[in-house]
Length: 77
Image 1 (cartoon, rainbow, N blue to C red):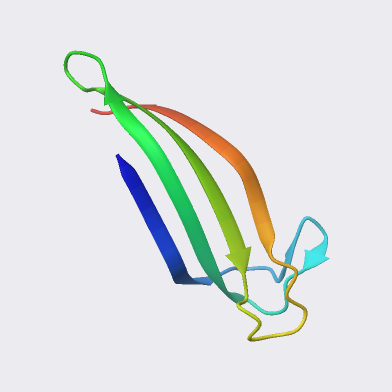
Image 2: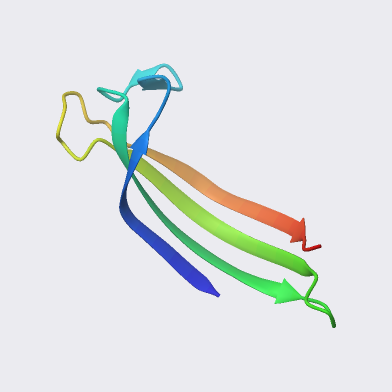
């Protein structure tokens, strides 16, 4: 499967991420995810995702934060 989130409004509890100010508590979230359900019964899942947070230049500063690739492995019950 493939999924994408574009400009999802997000509220974060702190206006800094990794000691970097991102402006305000209201930001936008973008992400793309590629994954699969595995096994005969499709009970296992694995996916890779890339995430980006930004305030969309609504507030100053707007450095944007991109998370490196995230690998998730799960079991569906």
